[in-house]
Image (cartoon, rainbow, N blue to C red; front, side, top):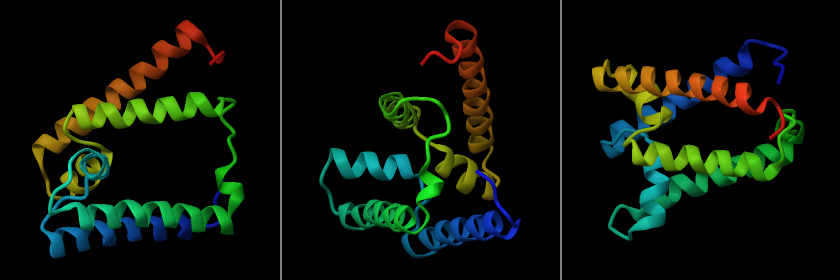
Length: 143
């Protein structure tokens, strides 16, 4: 993916920062997306309304982006759709199992100077890099 201007990622990052700030100010919660999705899908409770709205917002935003800029969704990884879906589900499952994800720890936690989030971010980045290296050494680009 190429950006013709540094403004595109700057605007995107600013919008993410604004969204997590609004969530913290008006809902008193950190924006951990895997936790929001998992709670929405697993157990009905009083928080399901706002959680469902967050999930719908992500889906609608993705659909609008796909309709306006479909070239951003091209699969240039040489991986099949099934591999990508399974990888995404495994990441989602792992983040829920580990009580945190990149949005909760790396974006929200680090901006609040949380040592727990720093440790979590370093840990999942390290093991993500390690998993890629191990996978490529054993399987190369076959899957």
